[in-house]
Image (cartoon, rainbow, N blue to C red):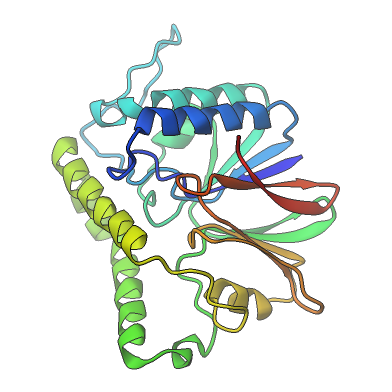
Length: 269
């Protein structure tokens, strides 16, 4: 069994009970581990994640005791669960999203997950599967579908995305005291969550949804699995790749499982 999960946004300042939210996620991962060959996390598992220069990067001592940096102690249940799952020999792949770009080795080294900072294709259960968080995948001609003000917002997002991925601002932000950097990052993320809650963007339709249109241009894949949009979608059409958008794990609590080449969106207990 291969499992897919994304967009938990752990630590979000708009989640009323963050401990219960994390516990629900850990329970799901532990249940997945009972029959999983692979667990694929497709980004934004944290609402904000940054690995600073002046914080502890080795979290586990030789006796197996955990010593997390102060700003990451809230995530100890999840991090321990990931370490336990990978210690069992189960592959966990972590594709970074637009809220957790900034892992520079500590997450992978301490939990055993395999971090991917770029989309990639894999062969799973006889299918060529394209995996990506989904931000930054803009199909050709997409901008022409929208009025000028929407085009401006899309361009603004793409410029901000390029800035966040640039190594120079990444390095300079790593120099900040973690408490200061986290205060900024979580507030920025909080505003993003509130904006989404107040002005949700539902599925735009097969002819306007950017990830569906992007998949339509790439018939070399049998299946495309995305996160990012917080829309739960399983789309099957002739002559086009099968498309799955995973929804989220803070409002919808959805994920996907793939068995014998068949993928299905499920809702966690």
